[in-house]
Amino acid sequence: MNGYTFAIVMLLVVTLPLGAIITFIPYLTRRTESFGVSIEAKYYDDPEIAGMRRTYATVTGLVSLIALIAGLAAALSLDAERHLGWLLPSVVCAMLGAHLILYLRYHFRMRRLKAERGLVSLAMQETVVDTDFYRERRAHSMAWLIPHLLVAAATAIFIAVNYDAFPDRIVMQYGLDGTPTNVVDKSWGTLLFPVWMQLFMIATFAVVNYGISASKQQIDASHPRSSLKRNLIFRRKWSAFILTMGFLMTVLFGLIPFHQLYGFNSGILLASILTIVAIILLWAIRLGFVTGQGGSRIRLPDEPGEAPTGKVNRDDDRYWILGQFYFNPDDPALFLEKRFGIGWTMNFARPLAWVILLAPLLLAAVIILTVELG
Image 1 (tube, one colour):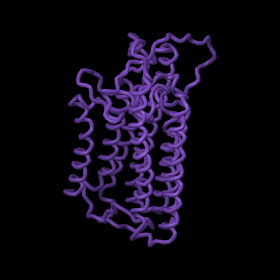
Image 2 (cartoon, one colour):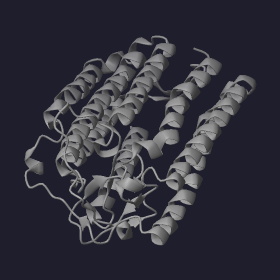
Image 3 (spheres, rainbow, N blue to C red):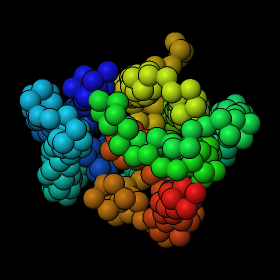
Image 4 (cartoon, rainbow, N blue to C red):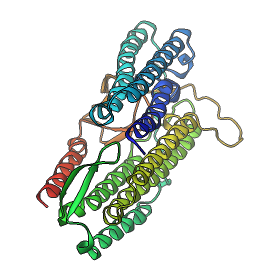
């Protein structure tokens, strides 16, 4: 696989799913939240609010398409080794930049609209808590990480058994055309780098899976029973995705020592990377459209409908900075669902949230230092 082909395939594999996700985010969030601002579900289809969603989707979709076309044109005309390295980040930044600008514009517009029109009834607000919620199976067991650990152990054993057979110079990085760009002396640190990365990812996915299970319950006050069922399904589906994604990534890093020892075509490794990335992104998109945030798009099996309670969710906008960052020192919850997009965030008023946020950076620095020192 030459540099041009790899760049084009990587651009398509990464940017097409990303463009789809950011374009349709407003349609995947809960009906009780619009651009990071809480509203009553009955206002979701309000012409002005619906118009914001359409404009956001149209503009971000067009920007994503233009950025992708420009990236592909550049990939075909620029020197692979000298210029292609910045193309993907540039295209991604253009897409995310359009998303951020439009999000902030409509976030502040929604806040003004809410203040002017009173989009949440003050008299009917209620917080619903199910006392049996944490007795339910909210995520898959951590035991599903055992295969990940076995792959990491097998990788470490393979390296230990074959240490003397590895070449004296180890390739740590390849260019887009498959040419080695970073070659270092053999050492335990350099050979075990894939194992350190496997363990790092396993720990990360374990924390994410725990966060899915332990995150604050968010039940729709107007339909508590059905929203609870949807939320439990939502958590389990995304837990399965996280655990499977972690296994695929662990296997991918496990291929590196085989490549270093047997020297098979680097195109095979690149193809494996692209395949796994494509599987992960396409699965994430499918899940997003099937579940929606919190399970809001999940269709439950046919059963008698739940009569609305007449209540609305409690308005806690004051704890959400820009509708994205939750900061509430009075809330013991550490993990909770995002307001815009799909997934989870943390309560940044809790010191542990900052530990979890910064620990991966520290661990990454330690791994790099370990490799450098051999």
